[in-house]
Image (cartoon, rainbow over all chains, first blue to last red; front, side):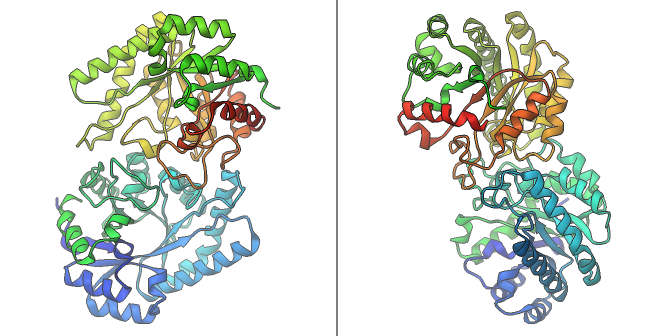
Length: 274
Length: 274
């Protein structure tokens, strides 16, 4: 069944280079997109209160707030600063009505070769954030990133690991999982781990994987341009109980260079493939 | 404990652009490297018999033969051709005394979005190869490649999947696993799956992961230049019973452009980090 229009959201990183948050809110609404996920650096250009008012006035839903986490460092001062920053993001997420703050793990410190140690630190710091998230009514959405960015962006690498962390944290009211098609499509364990995530799926992010991918970070594909069976993955997350929005999130030099009017229109058109 | 010199091997792809097989055999032996893994296209320039004689004369061990598999296609004719080609490679591996033929999965056909279907086809075709491998005394070494090349090179993506396939194939005398540090280092499930592979580990390949990796295929790192704790991974495979060679295999535009004399000398020097 085609995605209902009221469930289509766009992550504003998709139009990052040419649209401010105010422009993205206005533009997405004008194209009939129902929701937006907001990035913290864009939000801070106008502040959370102004952002909240603009989003409300445009009639958009908020599907999430990006991007928290980055908690892997072994440096105590840097770690404390990141935990504080995540608390500030939880507050901002609450102000704009975001149901979740998306958390990625963070990569390895320079010279660090102990990925297991880095993972243990991230888990410990996510645990520290739980009371604040609970108080704010914001879910911490653990997002495994693709293993190719394990060293640089996220030592949280698979859905199995995210599920294991949810088990360990034992806070179903405050911690969930963000399933991103681009990051997890390759996983032989994918469907079993999505089913295991029943009741935990806090967000469903959509981008395609281009067969001729050239960059490890900024060459994600427009839905339909790549190899992922997006409709099947949506069916799998829905079979696991997910009823939220499908959030198109395309980090791509190619699409950043294009007119956002065209990019957003194309996302709306391609939503039929999700 | 440092790697014993008699356990260091180099995969000739490391010196692919500037050395023929004959030159690699001579060069590795001259630098005191104990073993070589041979690539089929290089071998076929001189033939398996001549290659076998040269390797024997140089006193090198053979740690493997590359690269078989690529069995994912849905096209019947292409599939038959690949199975035949793999049988030929098994024979070549036997002729040069290689203990294993390394198998990768192959990627998706153009337009194919059914990765589970592709995986099922690969598994079925590996099963077809077992009698021939058994007859030749050559182990089929299933090598999971990094998930970032799932679409293009190998739908066999994790050690868990390789272990599951070994369970399904139930041919411990003919099917094993190649553990490649570069492809699996990021896996949260790594140590458990290596332990699970006890008795199956047919090869141990070594390359480092560069923090600033720029290419999805040809930017592997010289041991010591990246983020992988190589000595720890060798200890883990040895705890799981592996006693074979450590085979340095670096696919890298950077190292291909350098004088192989320098590259091989550096591999020998860096073997202390493995």
